[in-house]
Structure formats: C-alpha cells, structure tokens
Image 1 (cartoon, rainbow, N blue to C red):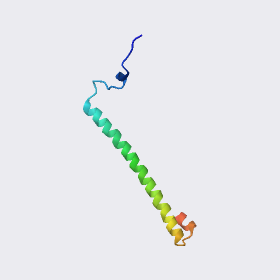
Image 2 (image 1 turned 135 degrees about the horizontal axis):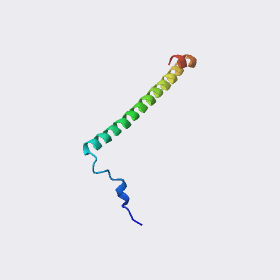
Image 3 (image 1 turned 45 degrees about the vertical axis):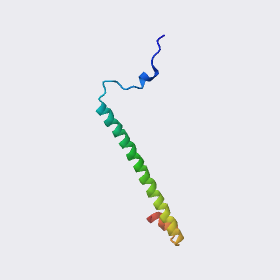
Image 4 (image 1 turned 180 degrees about the vertical axis):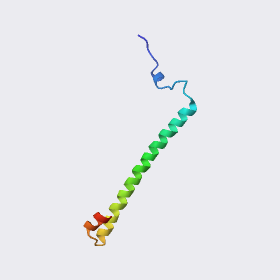
Length: 70
C-alpha cells in the first residue's frame, strides 16, 4: 500500500501561471466584498426605513400611512 503526502493534494499544479492565480484570488475577493457591500446596503436601507417609521409614530403619524408611503 502506497502512502501519499497529505499536503500534495492542496498544492497547485506547477503549470498554473502565478499571474492567473493571483488574478483569480483578486476576482474572488472582489466578488465576496461586493456581496458584503450589497448586504450592508440592504440592511442599512431596512434600518433607516424602520427608524423613519418609529420617528413618524412618535410624532403621531398614522402607522398605516407610513407603511404605504415610507
């Protein structure tokens, strides 16, 4: 039974261009950051909407109006 090096599967092939590997990592990181920013934008929008509703409610604006126009 042959024993293989456990780390050999994780090593990239020596035929891979280092420039392409670097670009692929940058592309992946950029995509992940864009997803995070999109999520933050959505959460920020939701938080501001909820805050506006609370402020309107405190000022006596009917909740029915704020849910239709907020």
